[in-house]
Length: 178
Image 1: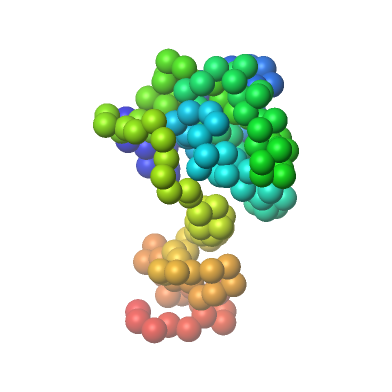
Image 2: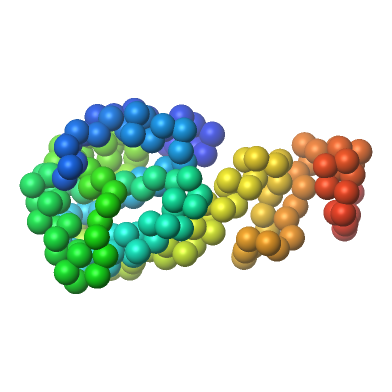
């Protein structure tokens, strides 16, 4: 299955380290980031979950909930949470979804057919926050963001906005090209 940004996130119910999670009910009207990990206790994934835990206020400021998914059972997630707190100095306060049958990972197209059980390169969560900022801005205002855009920098008014509407909605804009 291939998902696009305009698709409704597929619904699922799964076990977590803290009990059952009904994804759509848990998410509510918030934005969400669902990220996968090959297995609990892998070194790179441990640093990633620690990074996300340290960024809890940044995600909350964007009305965004995060959840992680791994093929290991919920009992292992509880032990992994303690390991993350010890080694990364951050308490995991978001759902760790147990997906031993890979049902949720398959539903979201997260598993490459030739996947590896370990990760060698950690994700850059500052970049994930930047993309989240861009997605929220563009969804609300019919804008687009250029390469390397950072919050507060110039944006692009999409062609869906007429010149007249652009002048009304963005009175201080500058037109480089019509």
